[in-house]
Length: 124
Image 1 (cartoon, rainbow, N blue to C red):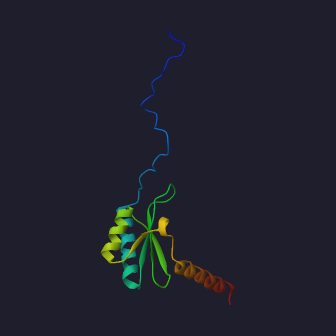
Image 2 (image 1 turned 45 degrees about the vertical axis):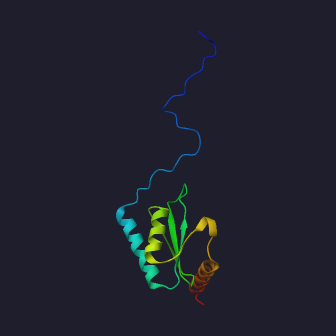
Image 3 (image 1 turned 180 degrees about the vertical axis):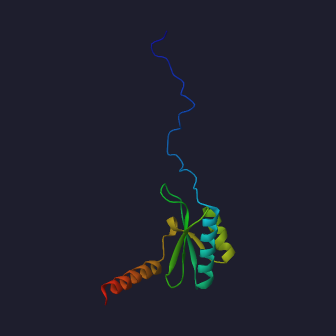
């Protein structure tokens, strides 16, 4: 019997490298509600743009709709392709957030809302 024998790797061992996150278990109703919310947001505001955020190990794919005023909303979507298709159907531009980033008007609107909330809580 040879002292150094090659062992064949077991087929049950996973391949090296990062593994894909498990598929999401979001219900169809939640996805439909998210799509309805985003559609209503886009129809009721001026200058809306879609910023698609990629799936990570922590979150599913999301899309942020940002109006010309800076007001924004974020919802989960099935896939980046579905988010792009929704934006096309609504007639709004869509961007990959990890490539182009977010517009300054979004940060300004968020800061302004935080200041208003702080003033309201302080009783000013």
